[in-house]
Image 1 (tube, rainbow, N blue to C red):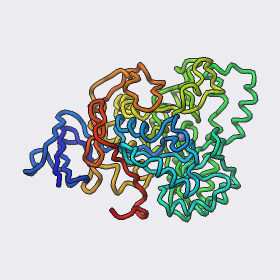
Image 2: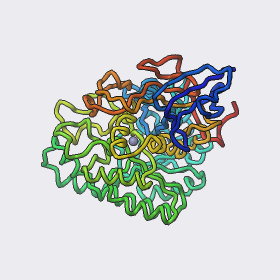
Image 3: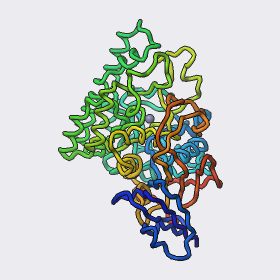
Image 4: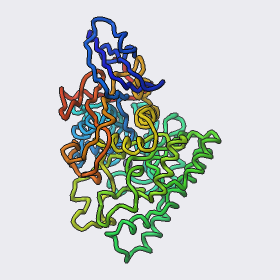
Length: 456
Ligand SMILES: [Zn+2]
């Protein structure tokens, strides 16, 4: 039996930030006590002035494994995650081959992940045009929920759903009680805007932004809210970009609809006004909008309309970003940020008067709840897995490629000075990242829904 105490001046617990010792017995948090109350027999790990936050949970990651591991893969994604303070990732069902739309493909993913993960993981199931009958079996096999697209996701092997196809899937989704995560953009306004821009200069960021107007998201969210009312399923809007949808999302929540909302570091840290022409590393869908829009998203985090912040880590081989020609029409859309999301968010949040308690809520507790792993993850409380990140919130650093530990270390943030350094990440009491190194063998496990979890 191993008894360890992890001490720091700023331990971020659900009740507040205070000097404390986290007592860990084997893999779980046994208790959180004041530093002078550590009983005899514990190995002491004192992090002094640093902060200890719960291990971050990223419920929106594209790992691309099996099938496109040259884009990313379990090994590199979970290594990058550990370096970024994450202890749990939930993989999106597209980009991998086969896509996670059947129980057989979920088993293929489990095989691909086996022995490669430095942090824990789970997999969302996909809802596509023709797999309605796979939804309940996927739930029984242990996915924490589902993901679908209302617009073409732009990758072979995963289809969008029309309203009619979604309607035939929703009774199955509702019966599982699990959330449906939706990419909320619809094709109509995109097609019309893109047609009108046929002769525009696609090396300009403004052209790309005009091709995906706010209306694209707004119309999708209106449709989803009405379906949520009609079918009574748990709706989760992924990567909200437009602030124009916020009033209707606020109203839906006051009405008591089961709707939750996420946004991402790039929508909170970058703005359209400062994206240089040709800088396709900033391309994602929905697009990064104006600074004014960005400020409204921060306001929505403050008032709770947006629940969580996730990376939407979506890498590709660098050639697909078309950096040489800088063409926003043909470049792959997706921004990778697993190793750097916490400093990005802390840089912004600390300037806006938020605390590490808010960050822990957005980046750990809320995504753990969405992914149905909050009985073990997401908070520093007795009984939970001893997952945590040691963070120096006061130190600044300049982002260089050697700090990005995913497969292709490209990033729109290179060269930026950011606030907050991840000093170490602990998974079930063991270090998985310390001062630039990754000790130990990969020990990450799949973390399935409590109902489906097999006994230890
Ligand atoms: Zn995504």
